[in-house]
Length: 433
Picture 1 (cartoon, helix red, strand yellow):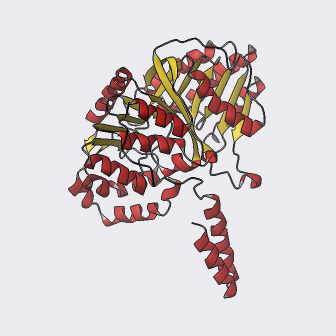
Picture 2: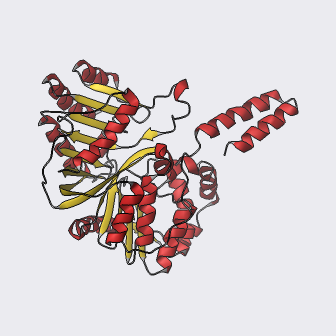
Picture 3: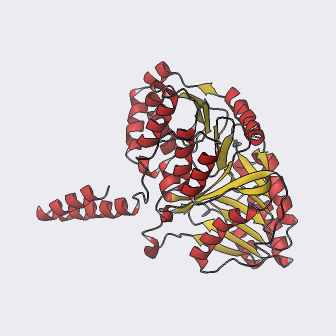
């Protein structure tokens, strides 16, 4: 909240404490800029229609404004050994267009491989448009940036830190989208960086997944890129090289939900909450940064009270975000007391974002279960209501769960004073997690 800092600033000026006043007003500006653009819903979270029912799907489509697109094939690619080769192969086969929206594009071996593939296609005459987050991809490196631009790739920076973006620079694009020829698309938790290489075997290799989509649902996936490209550059992405007529290539109906704080209500938050209140038997959540707000905690515990088994798998000691880790651990007590089963994945950094409900519905994408993803970031989520696909995702969940450790309530209660102090400090910035 920015109002208390503003009042303290005024009081300091009245007391002729000008340096204090200047400091308070500086904090007022920071708090105002970093304030969440969206708040959690408090009403309408009633469990009326079960997950997977026609009424549930119609409500999900109505609330998010996105319908299911039939006729698709979706392949789940686990870890860098699977998704990077598939992404690079798609780029090398491109003939009409390549569109990339990435939060992370970091200097390194992986970036070099993608740059080589992208520059070769650009020199061959294929339009390449890249929308990179100005904060997340700031370490792309001069060599990669120069090689891409000299080859003819168009690079735009999403919300650079400038004086004229002061009202929006806390809004980042956290999407990880690659669309080739308007026919093949990729999205998931992984960006372009070396720590995603491999098969998550050693501790320095991240555990993650990316979905490869082929079919009519690629168009709505690309629409998220097109909207942000227009916002950033003023250019409309149009034409058959980007939006061709794509025939059905599979039997899966896919809902592609783009979430943006500019919309006034987070579609990602609404999607998660509606799925939780609609669960009847089981909810499985995998998320590296699990920091539910009060409404989410109440909703999850209410699900347990009506007989739903809730299992949550989070990243453990191998966590790249200290702030998220402390805020997540701070909430373990109330969740465990409410009957939620918590597990920590300690082997390496667990980074996929998945929720499975009642064996019939699931979502996988870029959105973390925290306020930053819900209130500040541009995110993308794929939703499917297909038991066979959900069964595949559930099998992967069980594999990761077998490699994890359950959180013990008594052990958590015995954590030290220093740990509790760190959690308290971290809670002061919980809205930025």
